[in-house]
Length: 447
Image 1 (cartoon, rainbow, N blue to C red):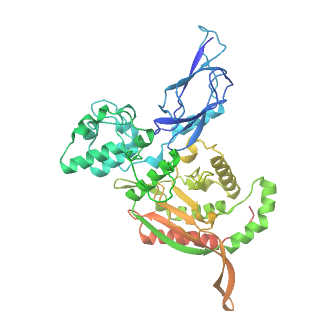
Image 2: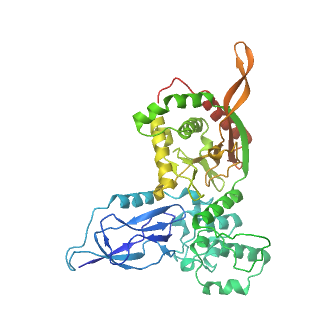
Image 3: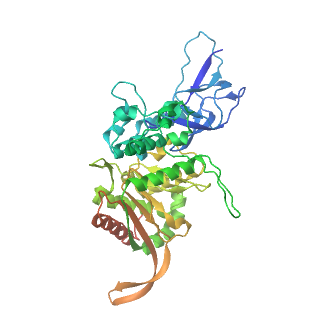
């Protein structure tokens, strides 16, 4: 009988390792082709690893919570093929195609602002091929640390990788002109957890005294990554937020009129989210600078319009699945994409590629009753739009017979944008344009 290695799959060009969350199969269990063997997690999304062959799980090489580099053998499966026979071949299953598809997309959420942040450029000039995470390269670029200096910084991360803590310590010591003994021997320390190697700085363990009745809760992996991502965004972009309000009475009335027929015909419910995305896409086409990113002193305008929608998970965490090429979808297409991605997110079925490549983000803070918010930009994007709860309010409206007061369905909108390249005039104009699109919604339209 032949033994086949199951390896940690590659799930994106910037993803170098993954954490094992759960083994669905144990040694001795029978596995079918494409049957889930284990669950893994990256800094993007949790996903499943399927079996590449049918057979018996012979050996598990790593435990839950182990951080494993991409391409490493994680388990061995014994098949019914005799040793010495032809090499085992199989057609990649659907889950393998999903994992492989994500390799074609760079992880934009960890893009840097210097051209040497690209993975190919992280190879040192002397050919050592040392890997640096995008966050480390980002800090190096902002602090003026050359590649030659990076190569001489001892790394405490997995396989000697330079972590955020390492480079910040180096920068601090360089500014003070002192290189402590600790920095010279730091390479002898044991590897740090994967969270730190991906950019989240863990606190040193120390005894802290708390007064009163308190409960201590350790952050889970996703919450640590969200925290690091949010802090890094505030450190990177000059955040400005503009506000406006929109009369969305026409949208509310139209949706109420068509929702039963829509669900019957399309077998899915229509929410307000695809209607908001439709308006956003139209305005992005008018103001393409909103759909851009910053790399050093260059502005990269994205021709693809990939809209992310912030989605709350049952455990309280947040994830942003991406609607790719949203400008090429009609309202029915947008609705089906929104519902499928939201359902997959809440049930842990998102693929790594589903959270990559976003160029603009929508967050619905009104879902939980909030009137408005000041959202944090989802790097490397330059703008994020928040929509608040829709509330009935008395407002002044213009009629052919003069002004009057009427009860209307009103909603606040807020746009946070990167003031490095988007000034108040453009930010406010884009936001007003979105409100105008929503207010002039055609109640007689079909879907």
